[in-house]
Length: 156
Image: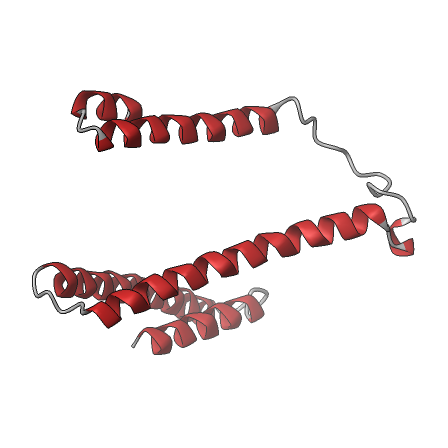
């Protein structure tokens, strides 16, 4: 059901994009609502799927050792795919920075591109990210020592 809904969702999105300049209001109306209906069905199916997994794991105890190993392996494969995804971004950046293409003038950064001030918002976001890691580690340590008050303070 999820794959059929995803297929219909993609088809309705493509049809909407192709009909963006169409003057027929009925076609635009039909494809826009088809997209929204398929999106809502997809969200509903995902919620039901996760609900069933939680019920199977907690209340029914159906997750055997092999199922638990499969879930762990799936999560590890997800982490590896994320690592490769970010590695590809860094590879592309350093490849372009160290050997700029002639199509961008042979210089890095390309001409006429405004650079972001790294001491502004990016620095603030980095500090917030690091501080959230510090506070969650603090809260985790307090949780391991069974100190509920310090764990709550770290989360807050």
